[in-house]
Image 1 (cartoon, rainbow, N blue to C red):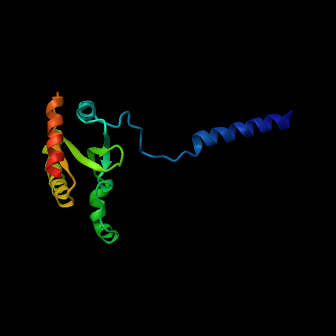
Image 2 (cartoon, rainbow, N blue to C red):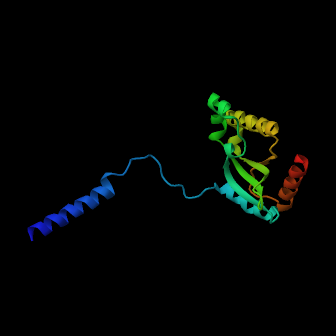
Image 3 (cartoon, one colour):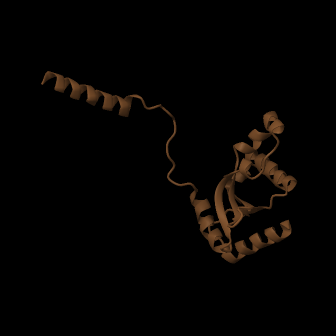
Amino acid sequence: MAPTIFILIAALIIVLVSIYGFRPKYPYEAKKSLLTKAEFDFYKILKQAVPPNISIAPKVRLADIVTCSDADWSRGYGSKISSKHIDFVLYDTMTANIILTIELDDASHNRPERKKRDQFLNELMVVTKVPFLRIPSALNYDKAEIKLMIEDSINNAK
């Protein structure tokens, strides 16, 4: 009987150590939602404003939209795009080709460091010829107005 108790206690210790003792300690925690409330409110209108052949990808990493050579990446240009994201990307459902990128501008875009980022983003999208639209954040959105802004941006990019 003594060996059985010893085995049970050893097994219990192993289980407890594996559960509590060997977990890496990270300062991270899960977020409840992918989008902020303002982004989600806009997303719901955006879904209604785009035709069925267009899909919406939220929070796309900028480096997945534009890129540079390995040499330029190593020179630091890659880090300028790898840690930033675009709020929404509209893409063709059949081909995954990018149709339009959208940045929702809330109050944070008035901060000096954010203005610098926004200027970089504006210039980058022009240079790379990626269709880009800035939409001011609002409490309410007019679906018809958003649809027209999207159509105009797409047509102007052609």
